[in-house]
Amino acid sequence: MPALLADVILAALPAAAILLYMARAGKAGASGRSGAAPAGRVGARPAGFVLRAATLGFLAIIPAGGAELGLSALFPWASGTEAGLGARLVSAFAIVALVEEATKLLAARMILAGKRGLGGRTGSIVCAICVGAGFAFGESVLYALRGSAVLVLRAFSAAPAHALFSGIAGCFLGSSLFDRGRKGAWAAGLACAVALHGLYDLLVGSPGYAPLAILVLLASWIALRRAFGIALKKDAADRNIPSYQSACSPIV
Image (cartoon, rainbow, N blue to C red; front, side):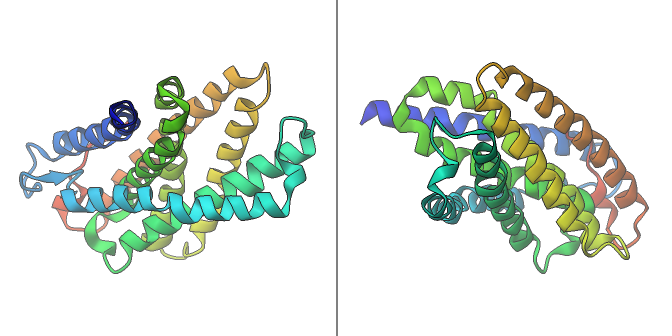
């Protein structure tokens, strides 16, 4: 029991580090500006906003896991060590990536429902990243039974991957909520997240190609960093978003 508790705590560390980084970045951006968010805000948003997103992301592992189990049962040929390239493509993109990214995006949209003015485009990105961090924690808890070595590996790979892919989807979600004529942009964000997630999983599961997955994470980080900068500028110029809600520094 103590060993399992230690593994659960270890599983929580990557998500906690991501949330702490987000909080520090937000507070740095809010300091020194007129009308900045008061103490206790995270990313110029209420701390509860971030915690709810992470919690819902954690809980999202339940429907996502159920859907993946159901699809795996329907398409047993798509899994297994002897599966061919076509089967592994179906597993990586259609069974795992599509289900997980769609579930996380839906969770982010649920958090943002009725609260579109809570942080603008950047708020959507922050929300999606926190959902991804919570989801990664939930997934790591399931892996805890395999031992701490797996959790250490996930801390440097799967945990940031979930946050990055969700963040990219969040960029498009924010655009669909705040940019005129872009209501369907969330679908493009989901497609991007699925493509990156599927490619990442395919490389990780292919002997000899796993190190290339780092390039997927690097490309995702660069894309998210650029998109967040654009969102910051749009939020600052948007009169419908109060200045304290756009008082946020780049997160990456």
